[in-house]
Length: 288
Image (cartoon, one colour):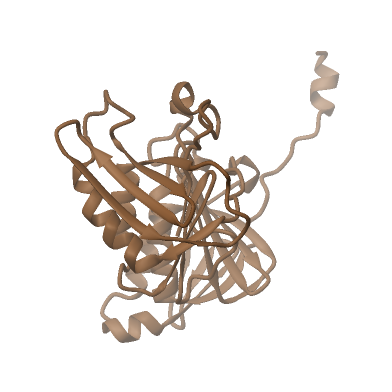
């Protein structure tokens, strides 16, 4: 390329952050805590180490994606159309600092606003490190559920089954929880070769149920992290599809097809294919 051509090539400026929202401190804190499950803290891509904040239509969607786990959290609130990509650890630290010295109740209810890259409360405004949203690699869209089960029952059975999962990374199939959907029954199973734990939950179809059983392998480590982040006593529903498991809680986090979506790791392509097993079973996602 000639010097003249190089000189005339346009230089695109990074997109400016335009996210605009108002949420309670409690709502935003919980949403960021869940979104952190998909944070790519060690990724060479600075954009993937951030959280994508999309606002509009009376909701805020926070998305993280480390190429193995994708998380999208939707929170109902005051929001106008916009998008910002923000440094996640700094976002969390700034939010926590804004509640320092307040009682738990006052901190929970305090209104927090985001305008572009400025995080504000009634008495304080903090600028956040903004990244270019165009550099962020978005995860695939979640798939609607075929059946639903009671959330409390699901998390109770999951907590009982998880201890039996293998923790040896050289045995990737055994480091997962096996979910099998057959008719009106969802079965959870895990084994470390020496013990086996299994739980069954009644399922209610939301569409025409599949003729054959649907099988899902889900990382035990990811599911353990989810159990540590969610309130297992909250009423709600867990939805299951051919490539997804989703939680729809009855509180301030509202459904958008799936709030938290965990995709199967691309490193498992030899086992899963991209999003499905050669045997007809499916890889996993998680919506919460």
